[in-house]
Length: 183
Image (cartoon, rainbow, N blue to C red; front, top):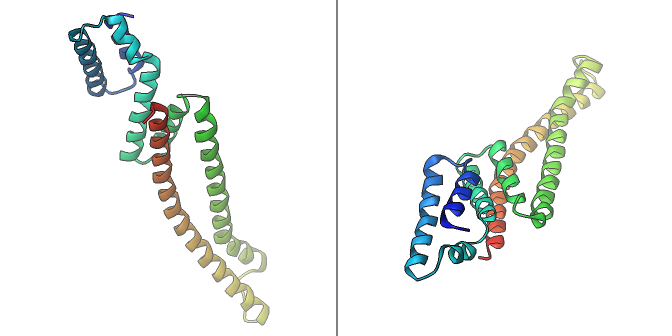
């Protein structure tokens, strides 16, 4: 593969990146070629030493997506980072997507419990009406208040846990990409 072919393929594979990022990366690889030529290597040897442009582009895109998810926390950015990391190989399908889906399932079920605790008192009011003074009705009133309090605390805790898990999963994705690169 010649330098031109290598650079054209890298440029097309990195088309998702902003122009500045893509041009910086292409400039770095052009520099690799120029340094290799100064050392007496031909373009084919240099391209072979650099590796497959497809694999390099996948790694670069995964790194970019992870950085994007770190700087702008959102579900979309996290999803793009996971998809970019999973595309690096079958190994990642098991060790990235599996834990992510398991954690999302646990979080969703916890959020459902919290919302149920918040909504349960409304169901009691609808079923029994506004409590009048009696021992049984007072028990239901205080049980409802406890349910709302517990649900509110659970929601607050889950929001903090979700943010923490987001950051930890990004660190895991970075570790995974570095492991694939052999660092």
